[in-house]
Amino acid sequence: MKRIFLKSIAVATLLACGVAQAQPQTEIVVDYAYADVFKEVHEKIAKDFMAKFPQYKVTFLAPTPGYEESVQQALRQAVTNQLSDVSYQGLNRQRVFVDRGIAVDMTPFVNAERDWAKMGYDKALLSLGQVKNKQVGIGFSLSTPIVYFNADLVRKAGVNPENFPTTWDGIIDVAKKSKAANPGTYSMHLDWEITGNWMWQALVFSNGGSMLSPDEKKVAFDGPEGKAAINTLAKVAQDGEMRNISTSAAVQDFISGNVAVLSTSTSRLGIITKQVGNRFDLRTARMPIQKDGRLPAGGNVAMMFAKDPTKQKAAWEYIKFATGPLGATAMVKATGYFPSNTIPANAPDMLKPFYAQNPNYLTAVKQLPVLTGWYAFPGENGLKITDVIKDRLQTVVSKEAQPEVALADMSKAVQALLPR
Image (tube, rainbow, N blue to C red; front, side, top):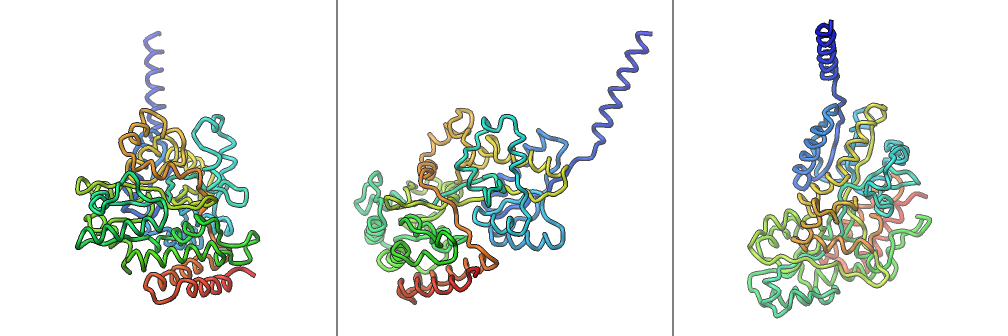
């Protein structure tokens, strides 16, 4: 009798396992931008996530080239009811998904987490994913603009890399000296064309300015702070002898050891470090900033678009994993971004030894106290305003227009596109 009972238990256990294994996986569809930066890390995170949660399956859409393209893709998918369940969007593009009722407010999911306060989500960093009092994004990768420089070229110009200048005038002077001391090389490049007018915002914010008035009805970047910003760009182009070339071309020249100074996002640090290798002594420095200045946080957040409760549950587990300590550690090591989760940086089994061995990565982390939001212009013309600003900045870089004339033209054009 005992043997029959044990046999029955064994059969029941096998049947239960068979049923569990036969349960279909919940699939979540995920999209992201910038395959050159993120493909490797997203695939690793998804693989690790599915190993831990075999009941879920992660499928990626083909990556989009940039954040603007990600927005356009999602808006098209919303019309055809083909939205991703999780979408990684630029910090400055969350607003459009709230305005159109696409983004899911994750506040209830946060509130349901019993140990949320211990999970490493700092309130200030979480605020970067909040729009209209809704938690629509959870930070995945964050960046700040920083300055990269070739310490070997700088030394030959008689400049001590340990005392690299902290002002634009000083940086421009070093870049010019380096070019003169190293025949066949170039001085510097400022990544003015970066997505979402990010560097333009950095120049304005670092001088204490803002994009619009508090009620968002009037352009505010045409004041003294904006004039200082546009004059900095003009000075880099003229005195700093910046060439009128694409940033991708300038980055390649920098990697080859032919450019002294490059100012761009810390997001490029992983790729640049890997490609430079031992070619030269690569250093990074903080972005010049005035006493009351700020810097816009770049990067992206994980947003939930899934509406089905089962999909939402799976999407939330995935978002927590990707933005949590393990996902953040993988992301930092594969890119130049820093995490929006506070646990890994001080954990000896995660990022603490990495930062100790790679001080260039700490430059952006040290700028955390001056971070502010990456501004998104209101209304239906938000993306168009981005293009208008970029076009006017181009005329300054190409020296087709005087800086203050370009600024006045930019201000007038943007004002005309704001909601009335």
